[in-house]
Amino acid sequence: MSGSQTIHYPQDEVHTFLLPVTVSCSYNACAFCSMYAGEKFSPVNLSDIESELKHGDTYTERVFLTGADPLQIGFEKMNLLLDLIHLYLPYCGCVASYASIRSISQYSAEELSILHKKGLWDLYIGFETGSDEVLKLMNKGHTVSDAISQAKKLNEADLSFNTIVIYGIGGQGRSVENAVATAEMIMQFRTRRVITMNLTVFPGTKLKEMVESGDFIAAPNRERLIEVKTLLENLDPTTPTVFDTTHPTNILKIKGMLPQDKERLLAEVRKRLH
Ligand code: SF4
Image (cartoon, rainbow, N blue to C red; front, top):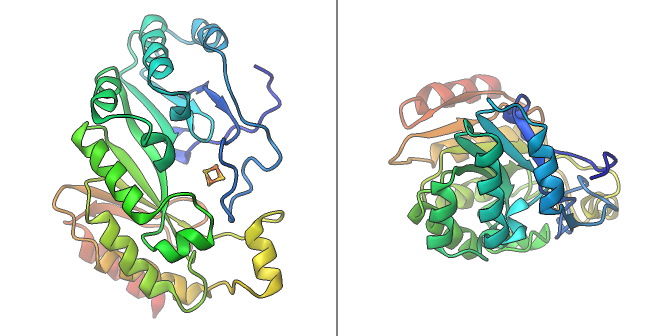
């Protein structure tokens, strides 16, 4: 594949072997996103993927599949892809990837379970918010009910995932309501980690146009911090869940395990609010 395409990956995967599986985003319509603006979506051929793997370090233990949504390629190709990874990188114990609620919906729980047994886990999924109104405003392409049912399907398949949410996404005056709705959504399923991002208005996005036309008023930082606090206050997971605000966009960078670190994390947010 040509080296000219943009490659995005989570900050925690910076030292991971990156394997291109798709180019750009097949959806490319979220109002806040400029990651793949103007880039055409295409899947990478299996023969090109195999060539990349042949040049990989045999002792690689973790692989991150790149592209906005590699699971778009479907079960058969994912299955073959995981076989190739294990053929060329026999020590690889974990294949991580971005995924969307839309792409997961193409798979049955049985198929997800098969992929999980072949090493696929640690998906990074943009849930963004638990508010249908805000999902619609941001043209996210899924509903809260879709998100919950796909997350439950991943739980059924034992395939672990990171839940990415964005604070400030509802705009000024909606932070508390958005945080409560997001926590309510997350409490419906098990997730390995809740990763927060702070809404950023990027040039060239629909969101930027909405800001310029006055249709969207960005929440001030204090309100955004109150949103983080409200989200934390309303999260009471019954299984260990990392709460992680260390992505560079965040106003406050904290990380801990819920439920045991909840009070410490809340104290850190309250301290910043005073
Ligand atoms: S947020 Fe994800 S799904 Fe939405 S346009 Fe950007 S890359 Fe595509």
